[in-house]
Length: 297
Ligand SMILES: NC(=O)c1ccc[n+]([C@@H]2O[C@H](COP(=O)([O-])OP(=O)(O)OC[C@H]3O[C@@H](n4cnc5c(N)ncnc54)[C@H](OP(=O)(O)O)[C@@H]3O)[C@@H](O)[C@H]2O)c1
Image (cartoon, rainbow, N blue to C red; front, side, top):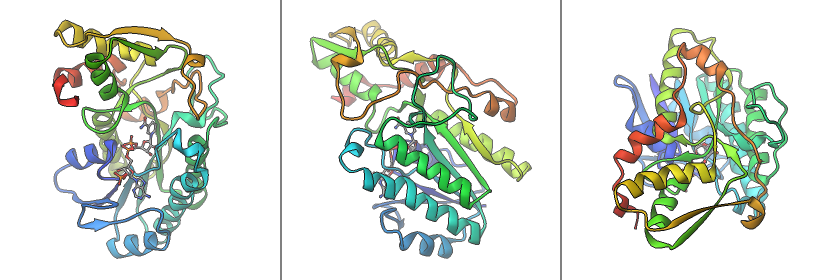
């Protein structure tokens, strides 16, 4: 199997490269630093690269992910997350091959109080969410052989993410104020890669597997609740000197509006995997155990 991984330097892309199953020919692609490079803004290059490589599977972990910045440049977000993704799908429809693509909980407005199912209505509140919704639509329109995996609140020990920000602030600030009225599910990049490969294995056994799936661990919390878990871990080891305070979103204004509740119901994925997904805390804890708090300073 020839597997192309786009966004190979991002949080999820990097883990996909690290965890790639043996016996698979992996072609990691990033904007720079890889043997084959691709900028998704170069729309003409997308079909050229894919037609040359003739992959069996493409996992697209590349995206415009700067949620607040997208409010200033919505067209660019749409070009990368919508138009380019549509071209990936159209090209694979002619070349053949499965497209695995990641989307986001931010396609939802967040007015529900029960976890969102794949069949629930989308209504993105911000430019990033809208651009990712466009990508989902383009794939569904152009290429039936796809797996779209919506996930949320991605973190890892590397990259730019909430976990690393909290670990740094806990050691450098007297007070850290974190919003407590946005509810969702923290999801580790290594976990996403692991589950993606489990799904790919299922697809190899039955290539009729396709469609939209929600992919997070079980349970939910607020950003404050997520921070509290990180702080507890650090305090127990003598690292957190800051006080952690819960605040409402109104006290932390951001350019992009975010859903108040965006927990995803992952029962459809659990049914395919034949096993329950772990609680988010059980995914976080082993990662925290590997953390050197001073490495983020
Ligand atoms: N982060 C989250 O909390 C979150 C939540 C829900 C869903 N998702 C989705 O999950 C997927 C993976 O997210 P992530 O957190 O791993 O993202 P990430 O760490 O921000 O990585 C995104 C990758 O996309 C690449 N990229 C950006 N613009 C590109 C372009 N024009 N051409 C080629 N590559 C480009 C970046 O390359 P450079 O390194 O060169 O910039 C980077 O390697 C994305 O589809 C994202 O929308 C993310």
